[in-house]
Amino acid sequence: MSGLELQLQRDPSGQLIYTDAAGNEHHNVHVVRAYPISAPDEGISLLGDDGHELIWIATLTGLSASSRIIVETELATREFMPKIASLKSVSSYATPSVWKITTDRGDTTLTLKAEDHIRRLNDTALLITDSQGISFLIADSAKLDRHSKKLLDRFL
Image 1 (tube, rainbow, N blue to C red):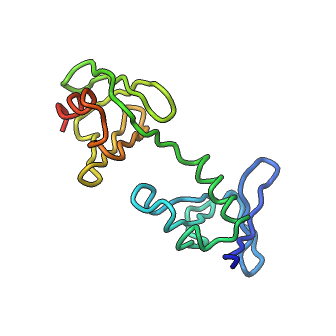
Image 2: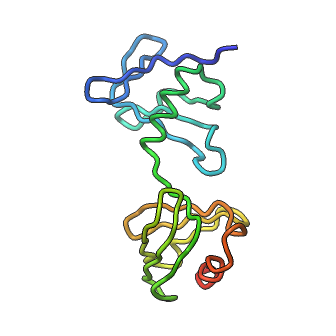
């Protein structure tokens, strides 16, 4: 069974073009997730250059294979949310503090400006936003190593 086939292509500069059912071309289209953490495969929207929604995609599984590849590729280039695997050290237990961490993309540091930049998503998931506006995800704080939990508990 094939899914919805979206008319998507790229212009010479790499921007996404969506052609709607009426044949109208929409240039510089952006693909965004409504629920990037809690339901990443559901609620996808194509937005026009003016920020208005062109089409709502209930689920990625409802798309044809070729459309899904384009949408997922676009999402991957747009989204950047490293997942924290461990905390190595923190400069201070007062904010601002510099954290040395290991993520799924390698070792790095982040600067936590205020304790309210740690947001609890559910019982175990946390979203930490650093001073540069980059969001880091701890998908399950219960799965962190003992040292990481001890450092993190000081901020929660």
